[in-house]
Image (cartoon, rainbow, N blue to C red; front, side):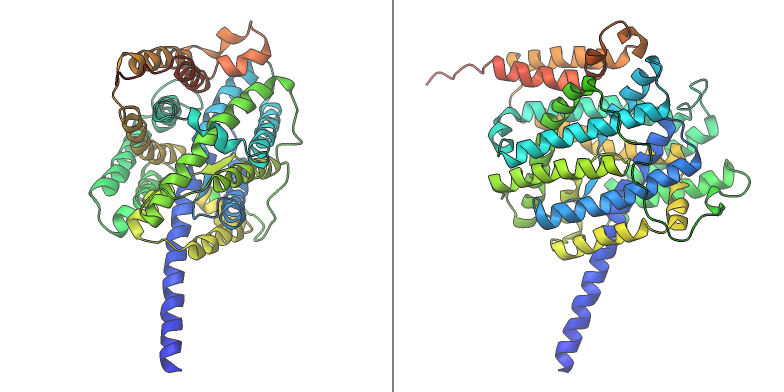
Length: 440
């Protein structure tokens, strides 16, 4: 009996520690992007805190649903970098079209719902696994590369303090942001044990403290009077505005997200089992539930979540392969969302610090994209496909949003998004321009 109690306590202690580690990982990946959205749409602190509350809830509930009923693997569902680029593009095109911030956000809600519908269709009708052949390493690598290029501008603006007025670099804020960037990178690549595991959280904490001591003055915003307990708000931005012009961008986004599902399932299964071990049913089910989670994200006026392949790195680093602590941590995230004072404290992270931490995490993502592209020999065909796609895709990123005003709205959201255009070109050319057969 005594031995049984000892083992029970040891097992409980182990699960508790693993749950805490998973919770910190979920938290570190959830805190920054809502602040980026707040900067893009010039939201006040109260709106950002409310978005943070809804983001925590959505991250927790969608991670739990996927882990229990979707692909059934311990993969965090986190705010998608692809959706940040869509938010950014639609913020500019919406402003040029004369829409106010709330109207644009309501249109984005509808875009998430349309994307979710397409993903559910892909999953339910088992289309997802049948189109996986499209996502060659060249396509996946090009997508990751273009994603990092497009978002790096947004993150760098946030680090320099130019997101809101766009006039001049805030020198002190920028210096602290770049110090945070270097801290996260340093702990990630040079740290050992828990220092490496929690590099993002440590970097954010150090940068936040330094920012508070040198830049901020007056009472901290998290001291505002708020309810101790509250329920995350439905349709906080208002009911969706269903604009038919966003359907093409929703469809293209849904297709591109298929590669995200596959990459995450392959990476995490490899970390758990030592090899890529998955079934077509898993991919289809994960895709279908990704559609459901997009609907949940839209309902709670949040950023659409996707399975984060970086979960495999966390599992590999910590050796935590059990799903149970991951599910518990997801429920803890849901619980935290009901306590606004805690959420407000966390959402007080300065935008330059959050952007710096995110840019640091994208270093690895850029490397992953490059390694995918060079996994096969870069012959003339592949180099030509990448060159055309990058020249046009990245070129579109540098064009001011007003140049697209004269074209139909249906095309604005597609052509003004260099990420979607570049990735689509790689997919089309990779499919049409067949690789020459090797002589036997």
